[in-house]
Image 1: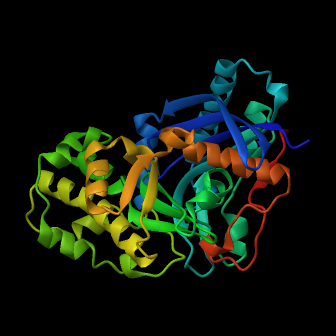
Image 2: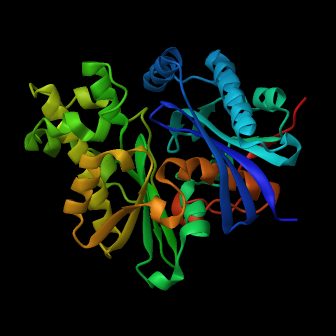
Image 3: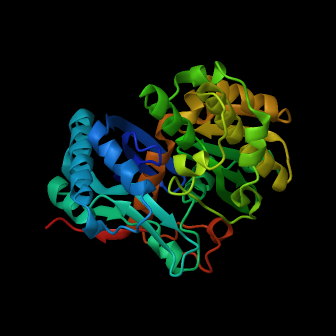
Amino acid sequence: MTEKLVIGMMSGTSADGIDAVLARFNSPHEVEILTTHYEDYPLSVRNQVNEITHAQEIVSCRDTPLNDQLASLYANACLELITQSGVDKKEISALANHGQTVRHEPNANPPYSLQLGNPQLIANQTGLLTVANFRQADLAAGGQGAPLMPAFHSAVFNDNKQGKSGRFLLNIGGIANISHLGDTVIGFDTGPGNTLLDQWIYKHKQLTYDKSGAWAASGQVNKELLGRLVLDPYFSKPFPKSTGPDYFNLSWLNSHLNSETAEDVQATLLELTVISVANELKQVGDLGGDIFVCGGGAHNKLLMKRLQESLPSYQVLTTDSLGIPADWVEATGFAWLGYCRLLERNSNLPSVTGATDAVSLGEVFFPE
């Protein structure tokens, strides 16, 4: 039987909290969201995540009690989601959890990607079969281990009626990544999405994000600073490519700053997100069409406005118009990856990650 109920959980590079969805899958191309739940990270946890992410030394799961602490937060969020849904836990086939990325080094030797949130402990505390460690099989196959969502975007959102140009899915989380859903799916990280914006406003105003881009709107784009930022080698690197907040962080930003005002820096960082997306679209052909935005950036009114102004040959929309609200696409995507793992179905895209083989992603943990 291919119909299954799967919980998907995502805590992204913004390190703000946990998105959880309960989804029903009738096939790999048919998904229905039944219930959603969001929980903020406690401030102490958010600070610990950011500290580990930006630390110079390499960590492992054994190095930090945060691995088990996060697992308990994930388990509690999962159980709360089940309570809200009214669904009998016995009807749920699996919990798929991405975990909290604190290090992503696909070009290291050997390559690795580290997500915190002890999956065995999550399985034990929820009583559910838990699928985690999604990036490792792709890395082992020579891929970047990211982005993982283009395969889900293609399975659920691809529309062959769009012709050769296809659709574009733009996820603006801490890191921004884009999927081109043509005959051959292409996807990669364009660079910082919200991560620098969030870190900068927290440093100066102790706010976790810039609501609607209001603080950025109070400043002016500093063209000299923007020019220095876009010269970073990552932006001109060909795809497949992926990155994370362990690269694009305040240390990276501070190395480019002179005497700019704080609000001008915020305005410039927002423009960096816009221009990095626009430049990458030119690299894939600037085909025009529809761009469907998901992630926290979809709520940043100034960011959405600047994207539309900078991409006049595209119509910038949100995934709400495709049936999955922008806030829940990634959590649903990890539910899909968990579903594929249960079916032993390949779920990476070598055209996206650069892997030599298609593989089934995720490691299974049974409750003890």
